[in-house]
Structure formats: structure tokens, C-alpha cells
Image (cartoon, rainbow, N blue to C red; front, side, top):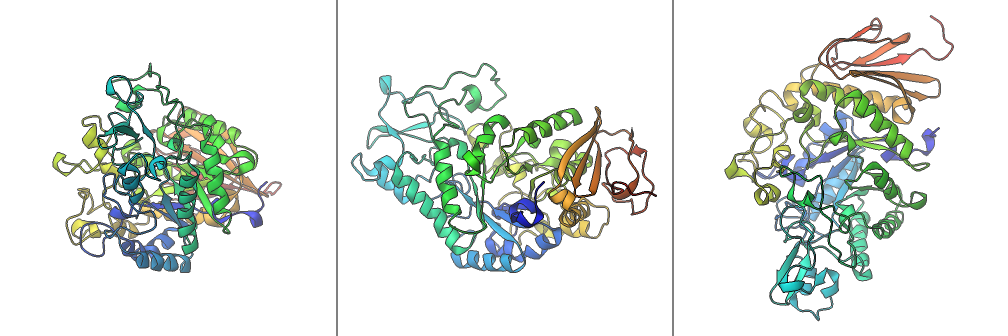
Length: 534
């Protein structure tokens, strides 16, 4: 059993992801900024989260909206200055919030000074900081590797007559982490921000960090279909999840451990059995390799229960679980599941064992926004049109109130605001005791105040095609969570106790124990302590 006194903040806390360009604009240019995040910290405190993860804020040509970094140790003028960041950090810590930054180690911008030097000649000292190779047969690319964003993963540089590798856009050349100088330079980037006081990093695209050294072609994917991303036409056997990546992660962890109380969260879209290796030998890797399985698993109880069992059963001894429902790269929960089941998803996320991550807007039930063709920003959609791969729909501005542009900006936002913003916004939902925002606030408060939800064990109790029932147990406290995944009433047998919460937010303490769960209803019940009588 986990000891409360030994629990790290990232174990008992809840992480909230802000996408800075779309969170709050304060300077009137239609793009969110650091001062905007600072202005909304009181909202996040009232919501009940413990840490904010901030997507990239670094200088960038914006080929991939900040993930093409041109300077790892500065701030893009669109979002502010280093002084703005320092002020945000001080303010966040003053109100009890931790700050996690995005760290992008796999690649840089092609405008980064390192790449400009590397590209200048084959003899440049930084040539080997990136992955350069001579052409293959008939001047073809060195391998058949494909870019995640469409097209070949190799771009020819006429000046030096070699190809360079890029897992993503050609404007995002991959760093060569087999070069110790690259490793040390990128670890120094971590130290720069840790010295300023950040509480950790979400490490981007870590499974792409190192490629096979012998340049073997990736095999064809027999399951690929034309509606899928073109990059999935090949199995990424030699361009992803290479064994050497764990040495790099261990080096990152050693740097983080030079500072007290820091966390590393790794982004790796991998099957669970391979994801577990990212905790590292003897837990010397990421404290939290992101578990994205709730995003892709079929939304029905038997599949969810099997996922929980597989995940919990696969964790290395002492490893801490985590759960994610959405982020800036995946369709929003309310779009995937519908608004009613989005409430069930919220209850599931915040009652499972482990650290939850909330993406901005989930707490008010924001949906994806269709983007007119002439307003598309995402390079993935531009490179591979018509397949619905674009990420703009889930990156639209946060909806604060019913004023123009949803209170996000006085100017036209960089992406269009959802047409439903006058009803789906923070101000309206703050005034409703049964809103999605109220549900998140109540759930987060219950989680924060109840050790059984914070650190308790998980135990599955009952499972049907429509119902998932499980317990969270700590000391002599047992909470039973019953979730109806269907639009029909479901009979449920619950033990004696006290109903703490219904996802409909219309059940008060002391209410009778229900025998029927209403459509799309979740219930949290505190059972009587063991041995206690009526």
C-alpha cells in the first residue's frame, strides 16, 4: 500500500494542459500568451488542478506551431518574454501550482543555429549533430522511411549533396542523439529551465529519438488502408522505439534528479507492453510515460476493464500509473463520445488509480470545431488533405464567456472560435450547479480530499456490456464507482453506504442507495467502514 507521507506531488496531483496559443490572449494579436495563462491561474486553482503543463513557448518559425524550435532557451515573442515566463512561474508557485514545460529533444527547426551550421558544409563541426546520409541508388533517398506528416522522411540538400532525416516536417530535422555533444547540449537545455524553477518536463515524441544506425528499410504494413495516414503504410520498425532511447531517457532523468521534486513525463504512442520499458530499469526512466490508451480503446465497459487490468498488471514494481483522455493532437472527448458520455469519461478519469491529465476545455465539454479550408493552419492537414488528420479542430480558443471571441481575445483569433461558445463557456457553466464544469470541480475536490481516490488500490467488482463497477480502497475506506456507459437505465446492486456524487449532480448526501443507474449516469458511493452496522 502506498504511504501518504511518501507520495510525490505528481502522484497525488492532477495535471492540466494549456495550449498557450489558444488559452488567453492579453495583447490583442489573436494569439494566446504567457500573461494570459498568468491571468487565469485563479481559475485553475478554483478548478482544483495541481500542475499546469504548457505546450511549447520557444522561438520558432511556426512550421509546426512551436514544435520546430529555433532556440531552446528563449521565449517566442508571440507569447511573451523570459521575464513574462519568470513572472508566471513565481505567480503559479505562489498559488500552489506546479509548472511543467514541453521539452522537444527529437528535432529542431531548420532555422536553429545548430542546423544552419550543420548544413553549411560537410566539414562543419556540427555536421554530425544531425543525421546526414549520401543518396541511395539513382540519387534516391537513403531508405524508404516516411515522414509522420506525409512524404519521404529524407530531404536532399543540394549544397552539400546529402540527405538529412526528419521524422516530421522537412523544417524539423532530427538531432543525432548518438553524438555525445548533442546529448550534453540538450541536457543543458533542461538545466536552463530547471535552474529557473520549472517543476518538470513533458518530453515530446520520445519514441522517435533514435533510429536504426544501419539504415534498413521499414517493412510494409499489411494492415494499412487508404483512409489511414500515409506514414502508416510502413511498420516503423527501424525508426521508432529503438533500444538506445532508454539510455537517453536515463540521462534526462539523472539531470532532473539533480534538482529536488521534479517530474519527467514521456510522450510515446506505443502498445502497453512496450510502454512499460519507458519507466526505465529500476524506475530510472520517466516517472510518467503517458498512457494514451483511453483515447483509442473502444468506449464500452468490457474493453475499458480489460485495458485497466492489462495496464495495472503490466506496471513495473513501484511504478505509478497515469491516464489521459485527450490532448492537442487528438479529437476532443465530447466529440468522440458525445456530451453525455463525456461526463462518464470525466468520472472515470478522476477515479482511476494514478495521475490524470486534463486538456484545456475538457472541463466545460468543448467540442472539435470544423475549420474552413481557407483557415486551416495545421501542416499535417495541409500535407495530407482529406483524411481528417488535422489537429486544428481540437486547438481552437478556450471559451471563457459569451463576449465576442469567447473572451479569448479582442482581436480575430488565430483559429475560429466554436459557434456554441455563447452557451458552452466558463462563465455560463460557473453559474450552473449541474454543468460539466461543476462536475469537474466536485470530482477534483473529492479526489483531493479522499485518500482512497488519491492513492487507494483499484479492484474491479462488476462488469456488463453497459456497466463498469469498481472499488477504490485505502485503510478502512472503500469507495464504489458505478458507471453506466449506455443511454438506457441499468440495474445495479450497490452495498450500504452514502452516495457521495452522481454525475448528474442532483443527488445529495443521505440520498437512498439507487438500484437503477439512469442513462449516462455515474455514481460514487462511500461504503460503510468494514464491520460498521446501521
